[in-house]
Length: 279
Image (cartoon, rainbow, N blue to C red; front, side):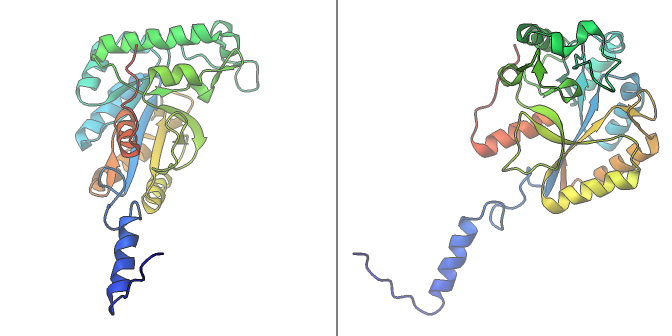
């Protein structure tokens, strides 16, 4: 039979307060959730466009920000400027895997541009795995790194009708999806990370999304393609600059980092294994 506790005045209140603080993750004792900051923002740029080298990287570097660039290694725009991309990696940006040839599922409205030889619906799982591994080897030759993240081309997750999830988990620390959402530290699925797709928004709209993520204490992953041109999915150079300038001014409260670093942080907080090494 438990022995009753005779609390003196004020003791019970103090004990309850201590129990609350110790048992409330993310509350007063543990502080901000994201690497000591209120929220996390990841800037990602797809398809190794020349505008990324000529316009985006210089702006990022001038503001002290780092990003993730998802590279389809078979694209000629990437291959003809390998020296420049090597310098991008040396400056602390991540070169993420976006396959060799950016295969997507064709045969549907809006996908008329998909070439038959790169129609993911006709891929075998083995072909997809080989392409991912080849891209990892290519990227390692450029930046010397063995650990990186992945972005599903077009957000497609089936090769020949079979899930590519197992392949992605074997090769990558995390993977960016296409679902529109602000993630939380407790619920984020590292292999289907939600995003904010940028296509024509104003600078004010982009900043508003960051403020929402800050208020929620979440993770916001931006997906850019063209910046001031260079792709049919595009945002103006001014809107992009406005967003980055705002982020640079808020670094005391917002953690801005490549996705690979955020994935490492989430794994450490959850007590997960360090993750796969690219092979």
